[in-house]
Length: 400
Image (cartoon, rainbow, N blue to C red):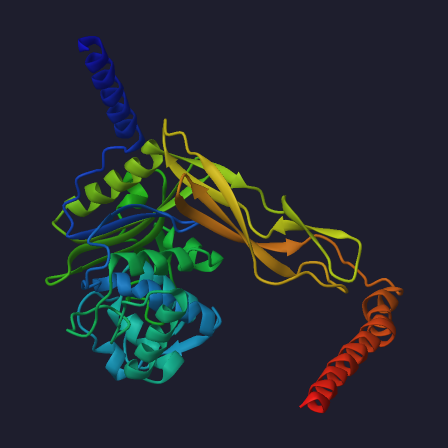
């Protein structure tokens, strides 16, 4: 009996050790809210108060920049208004009537965190800050940042100007897919053209991680007395890209917080390919045809697992419509859901691999033959049954 108890205890301890190996120890983050995501598939690797409403400070400028890049040309000339020139806080001291290209404006916005430039961009694109804020919020919803509401293009404090760590990660992930944006935020220094030779021309990024953390590839810092130290940062290592967000951290802790998150993501997780793009996942019969059509994965599926963890991957194909000839190549018919044990972890659409034409004789098999059958067999049977019943009814009436 004692031996059995020892065996049971040993098994339980072993299981606990396995669980501990599978769940890597999370970092201690000073910031009030934080999140770490995979930049390619959006998988969350770490979160702390990720959905809490927070002041974003100058991380707001990510959204301002991506809207500017999508709604204007880099060689557009932006004229600075008196309103823009008078914007308080971080700036490059633009003057009323001064003209800069949109490209130089976005560099100044993202490297020197220029609030005055943010207002100039807003007025150039939408006419005024209020209208531009509506555009920012519309873009945020399009990206999926549903808990974000901005009232200005720079992030200066406003009770109605807020976001979440999760939303900033989504905005950062979306923005980094833009080649021009990702180039700008990965720039340490930049010289711009100014009309007055005495004006500030040399820009230096506020993002110290570009110098202090080798894998860093952007994005944006922020600070106000209410928001405290904030950062949205991106890093790339060994073919993996991660985005870290830290909000309301204290002093230099914002840098160590971000580095802790990146080290955690890169060192404690490994990315595994679960489904290759274009691989055959299933086959389905095609109505009005004798063919079966292969279904291909529309996108590759990667997933980050803690190192030493052994996932148990299962697939489940869910059909959304029946395959019917004629059928074009690339038509979405189903989706494949990927499970690790009982938890769904990913999904991708399944599309037809080939075109399927309807054979010319299908008209006879699917329409003429059934019609003839109904006419020659089923209709006479129905008539016979009806006459038989009618005859019985007449006999009953005569007996009465």
